[in-house]
Amino acid sequence: MLKVQNLNVSIGPVPIIRNASLALDEGEMCGLIGRNGAGKTTLLRALMGAIPASGSAVFGDVDLLTLPAYSRVSHGIGYMPEDRRLVPEFTVEENIRLPTWTIKTDGVEQRFAWILSIMPEIGAFRGRRALELSGGQQKMVVLARALMAGRRILLLDEPFEGLAPALARRLGEVMSSLKGEGVSILIAESNEVHVADLLSRAFRMERGAVAAA
Image 1 (tube, rainbow, N blue to C red):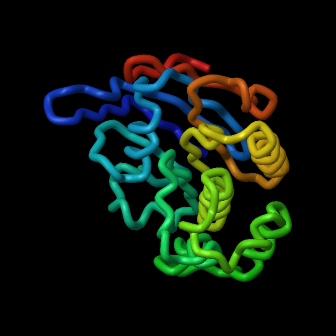
Image 2: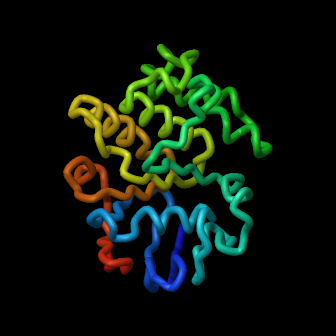
């Protein structure tokens, strides 16, 4: 499904990612585990085209690194950034639907209904503006937005960071329910406390390098 080989990212003269390689199978849920500053966020942002990178990141039959950033979501990639990046003045529903406004996709209403079926709590505040939500609620909305686009793969950056225990458990339940849906998931986390029971494999990342799973 996704095969990253010899990925390199530098910011100015400073190398951040060094020859990173990893691979996910279809429907597999894997972890990218490393301390803060290890390069996890940079790797995911490179895959999404937010920062320049060299090497290859073959997704299906296309190398993502050869595509303009704006077109990558159209290949069924959902991205959950660590800092949420919701549009504060938009409603919850508008934020979730946002990826579908930029690409042509079928079954939008069915997809949105499915998301509400696995995350019914979102339906209770779908009409509220994003800035009115708690941090934990915003995390749920960002996952829902990623699901709206991520029909084939999800890239989740620190989804459990800062969550109260009850919300962390709930988020884990939602992720567990995605098994069997055929979507591949790469979860970047600083440790395995919340994800150990979810993962089939975990890659270790340290100082910009990825160790074998």
